[in-house]
Amino acid sequence: MLVGVDFSSRAAKQGFDETLDELALLAESAGDSPVARVVARRQAPDAALFVGSGKVDEIKLLVQAHGAHTVLFDQAISPAQQRNLERALGVPVADRTALILEIFARRAQSHEGKLQVELARLQYLATRLVRRWSHLERQSGGIGMRGGPGEAQIELDRRMIEDRIKQVKERLKRVQKQRNTQRRARGRSGVFRVSLVGYTNAGKSTLFNALTKARSYAADQLFATLDTTTRSMYLGEAGASVSLSDTVGFIRDLPHKLVEAFQATLQEAADADLLLHVVDAASPQLDEQMVEVQRVLHDIGAGDLPQLLVYNKLDSLDPDQRPRELVDQLLRGDGAAEPTPRVFVSALTGEGLAELRALIAEAMQGAQAAADAPDHEAQLSIHE
Image 1: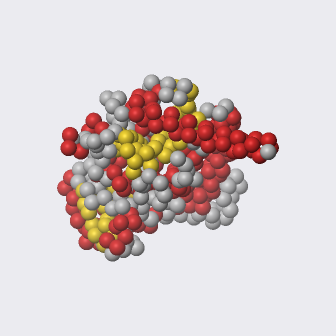
Image 2: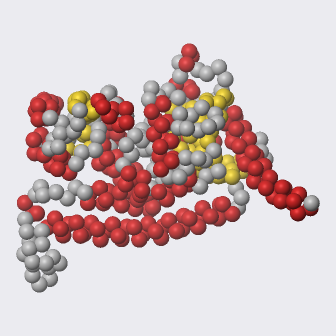
Image 3: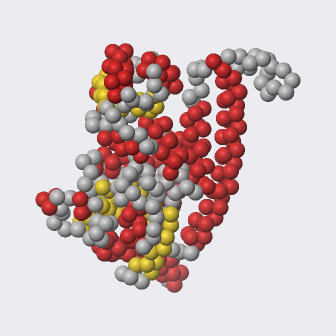
């Protein structure tokens, strides 16, 4: 069962999805099959049930009618609300954050990625320790028992989670130190660094494969790629190679703990010389998705980096939607003073890729010219 709540006064800020299509895609990515959808409208969340008691009764009837085994909320719900809803509905209840964490846990492949996901899940679980089971009755202390007299099981659970969080953070520090060493080595080599960023399922991995002839996993699903992959790409237009990195996709309401946990992975984007902001040109939520990507880029300190807008999936556009020119400029809605170069491509058919490579070469040559300019001026000053 999919449930979305439209808080009308805050709908624009929360990016409410009336259709719940994205939540349905998330559920399918986690291996679930949505059987019904419910949209509620409220001025503010109910403190106990998030939705009103009447809506809870409606959801319960639908759960029973469809034989649903889980209810998924499109917004974040508190631990107390989750507990109350599960008691009222008689089935497990999860929110968008838990669903995204579940997908990330299944998709992470690298050692670093698995550690990052585990950290995010532990931090999320630490907020979910509520008194829901009989084993949470007070334990008596004694010889060989870790807890003191009368220490509650919930406090023992919390301590175990906190200890594990510390262990994972230490292991992540060591892994990230290795990654930083590799990143600094690439930086010292003088290679121009390009990172693909964008909303999940915009086609970044397919474009990455098309540009580098790599074989990274790509699929028509949310969060197909979690681990950053970097390959060398030769640009004949510039007579040089650049490093191209494919990063994790962004999504609306991406859990803050996940942004924190994936900070090292996203650092590839923050350290880039050029960002290729890949956009699903056929998406009806194109504008909202672009705003969300820009927000996350600002969160990780990459908001002011040079960008190229890459409108992918040109092959999915109807003939009357196709652009007259493959290359133009667009004034972004995030406060950017100058228009951003934009190119329309199809990573599947290859259309527009030559134009994209030419734009990357142009940006590389422009950056090199800007880097050489201060040295040239300094030499003139010394000569004078």
